[in-house]
Length: 99
Length: 207
Image (cartoon, rainbow over all chains, first blue to last red; front, top):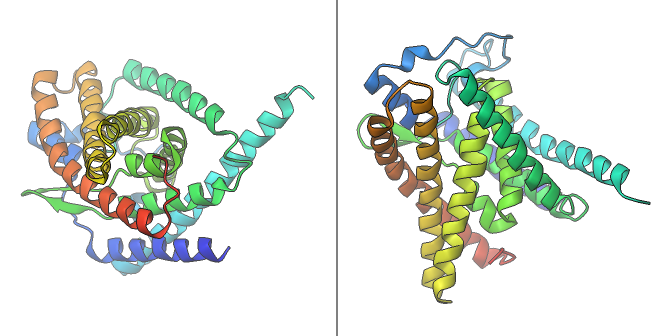
């Protein structure tokens, strides 16, 4: 348990560093898209309103805290989702084993 | 290289999604024992780590940035199947919660990064690190495999873009591959650092 908390603290520290120092330059694909003029094809995907578009919490106005909180929530969700996937797989496995 | 919605055509989206489902089903089937062992916390932590690290874009040449993919890093620690599952979880959260990567394009992104990139990089790592038993071969395998994972994922992405009629392969592939080779060097350095550290602190790595 303690190891998990230590590791998750490291993750949150990385989120903080990302929120403070991450480069805002376009990533590889975005850069290629802009270079060849197809970046505008990216739809404003508003199929449903996403809670934290682009790692920002809309009602927090300080960019560092907005990104940091979004990232921390994301890390927690990712961690939990792994457990959830594990639970689902275990259920399917147990239910289909020939006992 | 999270593909947003609007780039890829319907058939390409559907095809890559189908391949992702197939690949991930295989991976989940192979690792179901993981979930009964004590490996779930490790998987959870690695997933969170990769998610956090992917937020940290580092500048790469003038005008672009890159970030860690993490597939080979996870594969060296937990094997390629678990690595795919971890990457899949990260990509799902990124798309659904943060709009990083399209919703319809999720299948393509999972296929490119969690499957093609991860498994290609892992295979290369295995080949190189098995040539000789020296530690230098192991480490160079980690580095080259990690770099290759990024390039492979970007190549598959170029193929999808070409099949969608967005940019011809003979233009898109060299450009994507060139940019992502630079990003791949960053991936190699980060992966190597993490693996070296884990090796010293807790050498329960998959060799």
